[in-house]
Image (cartoon, rainbow, N blue to C red; front, side, top):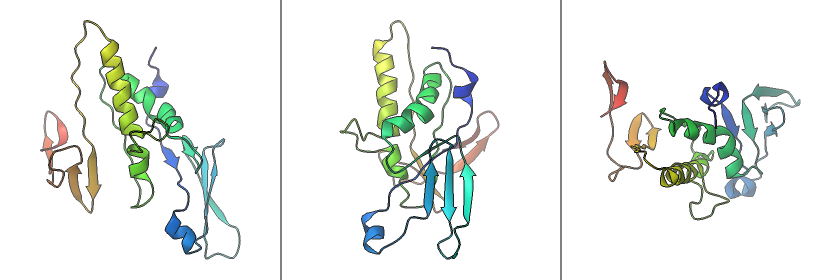
Length: 176
């Protein structure tokens, strides 16, 4: 498989989750519309009497019915293929608390249909390694959380340990 420029570009992808049980119980209304075909998310101001929408366009958008593997195959698989060719890769999930980042990133690891980005990436990487011959690999993974200006590696044995950002002239910005 050839790794083209398309897989090396930064992709901005949005996934919109359904209303949760608490939101449904309090009769919250959906103010987000997703157009998967056009890659657009439209947001309506619930306090406005008109139907004025603000529309934003992204590389891809996923609606409430999207599947974990659809997002992985588009947004992550090409990056992991590049990683397997020796490049560094970063998947960055951003959003407010409760917007679905953890589900998208972790999912339900024991259920292949609901497995998230991290377990799908691990399976992809280690399946590739297990099929390789006469090749050595070094795999380093971090699952960094930045919350209220504190940085933690969630894969660290002590994930309550706070990390500090440092700048190294040779490595650039890194954690300790």
